[in-house]
Amino acid sequence: MKNKKSKKNKNKSIQKTNELGQTKNSAKLVLFIFGIGPIIGIIIFLYSKGFFNSPNI
Image (cartoon, rainbow, N blue to C red; front, side):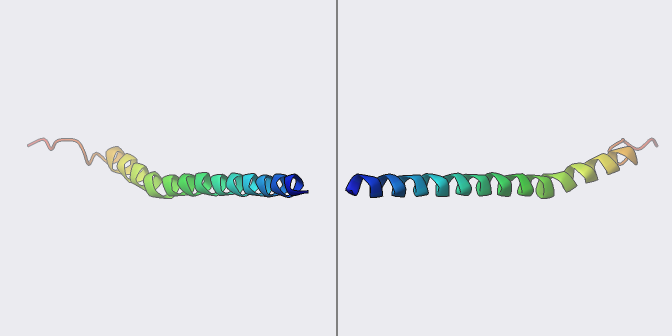
């Protein structure tokens, strides 16, 4: 009887860790897209407008 209960508990803990891992990966992906994405977008925009070119005097 004790073995059956321990197997059920192990399966539940494995499922919880899988869900937690998916949540962490999703959070990292969202932070990367909304954190790094706009910075890259601004750099591309400024580069296209010639912001990083040296001025000709």
